[in-house]
Every structure is written in structure tokens, then in C-alpha cells.
Amino acid sequence: MARKEKLLSRIQNNPHQVRFEDIDKVMRQAGFGERHSGSHYVYSHPQIPGVVTIVRPHGKGGTQFVAPIYIKKALAAIDQIEELEL
Image (cartoon, rainbow, N blue to C red; front, side, top):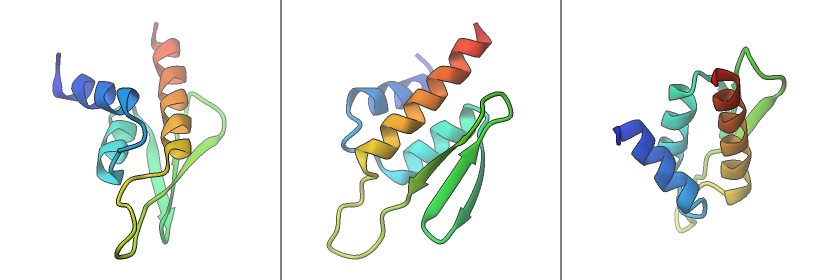
């Protein structure tokens, strides 16, 4: 299993403990473009409608993991891309 697939599998198996850098890497590898304003990162893909927004965690003392709702939405968008490639 390649690194890309291992990282995606790890995220799918535990969406509650995903660092921003990991989900950002997976989104870019899936072909998503990114733009951001402050802590809000917006990903879009030319083959699917809409965008996926992920809020990057920040601040001291708080969790450094991305909220699971953003991870689930990102994984759903990646699944859409994979279905189109089949």
C-alpha cells in the first residue's frame, strides 16, 4: 500500500484525530485546489460541484485536530472523485 493510500486509510478509520496537514495533503493529492482566508481553507475540484471548507485549528491549549464534521465532508468529496475515475 502506497503512502497516499495509507494516509487516506488512517483518516477514514479515525476521523476524530486528524491533523490539518494530513487532510490538506490528501485533498491536494486528490486534485483539489485550495484558497484560504485566515483559518478557513476552501477546496474545489473541477469535476464536482460545490466546495469543501475546512477550518484549521489554532490557538494554544485547544485541540490540534480538525473537527470531525470537516473530515467527513472532505472524505465524501474524495469518494465522489474516486467514483468518477472508475
